Length: 84
Image 1 (cartoon, helix red, strand yellow):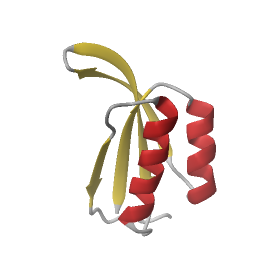
Image 2 (cartoon, one colour; image 1 turned 90 degrees about the vertical axis):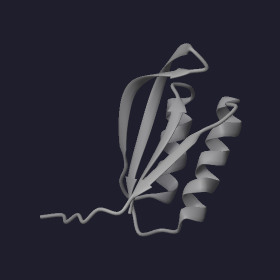
Image 3 (cartoon, helix red, strand yellow; image 1 turned 180 degrees about the horizontal axis):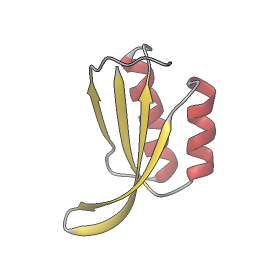
Image 4 (cartoon, helix red, strand yellow; image 1 turned 90 degrees about the horizontal axis):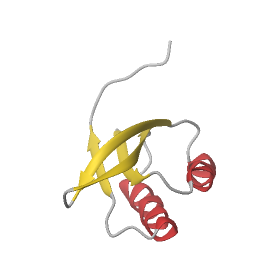
């Protein structure tokens, strides 16, 4: 399962530390988004894991609190992947 957590560009070192505790690997994308008509710097954390969704949501809630965000978007998709 591939999860994406979309957050504001805040407290990145703390966010990466939190993700590193729970996951062996993840990818960070720097993007731009619009929320309620206002442009924001955004970060997308992509996590490829077999761990339960509940862990992903718990991490997103911690990040939401840490960053003082109104909402955080979590997306997921089932994709086949293989390390070679």
